[in-house]
Image (tube, rainbow, N blue to C red):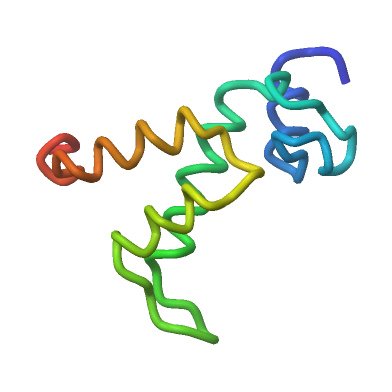
Length: 93
């Protein structure tokens, strides 16, 4: 898989920014930006949405959990948290 779209799909399929994921074990800093961005957004959404096995957690709890993780891009985590603090609804409108 050498084309950029395939690499992006690889990143979305399970590779982690710390190189422990599958299928390729891509090292930190080598995952495509879009893959890292979707991973942060998907994690935030998973934390703040109701699930069959638990209720949604607060935005503050989500931000704390995102910061504590090692597998997400820390710079993108901080960007999302900054957007959250400034009011994501106002920004997206």
